[in-house]
Image 1 (tube, rainbow, N blue to C red):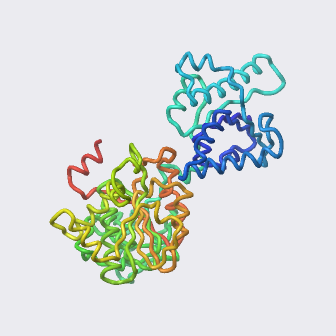
Image 2: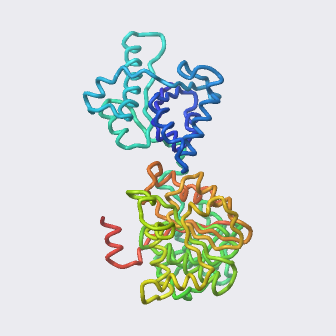
Image 3: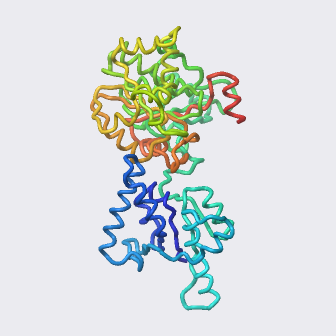
Length: 449
């Protein structure tokens, strides 16, 4: 049965191509959505870019006919801009003021009532389900109150939340398999006799199925054909020693020069930033493998924007960059306030920057760390990774469960997107850090709160 999908503004601002994602069904854009898109098109950020893309797309479709009468799409569906708001009264009675969200709900409700009348009148055309599509949870709740079907925009989701790639796997095997690995220092993937597909640079923990303490930690080769031992010992890296298996896996990826793309995910306190900075300092300052250590994070304010803060650019950015400076102070073991600024100025090879100021650059020969990458969209993460120059290594890290961006979630953000799309590639590696090592209190707070 065909459906009618009524799109909220945030769907189009999140994915300008969303109108093509509903197959042969009818797609409705309420007129108020065009007004909201128009108000965003002058913004210089991702929302502004997407608003302009939607505007150009609709203008191109307008050449095929009148949008208020319906335009046939290549997939067989129909796109229509709807001006009909006859259900205002009922929505206003339930929710008060006619906000833009309520106007969108009124359009959806009117379509639902029209389809219901078709069914009651026994018209030849079968009634269609009306579905409002929104990334706003409250809009979906309001729709439910009105008796409307509502759903999140799911077409951009790379994977189900339960299936997000972790980068490591525990397999229980016969003890002879573990003995074979220690004897020959490698195993063929076929020797494990498992159905689970292993990915290049994925870590495998072998445990004795008989219940003994015998175990082994291995890594899938870059070509995905065999299992190899870790090439690093557990020696300290700039004073930092891995405290658990996942942290050791992370250092293995961070210090391997043959893996230019590394993604790290995990909750606060699992050591993502500290491990990445320690690896970067070792590669830049000690081994001189890279010319510069570049650390950046997106400025996604939780409250007032950066322009409200006093001072010049560096002073405005300092509150957002402070978590980076905190970790650098720990690594350099500074004693007084301001010491880290003097150290960084003296070294000259470490640059802490807002992500806004590195987009569009070509960055060769650098060790690049992008913190809070879960706040990046697919387009933004593509823009950043595609700018990485020859001889550079980039690390993207963050917590997919802690997102400040209004239109992203755990499965549609840029970090999860790149983790899933690159897991088959030998040039990348990923690990999810699970155990908090900041303190017992911090771990307890992460688990309980």
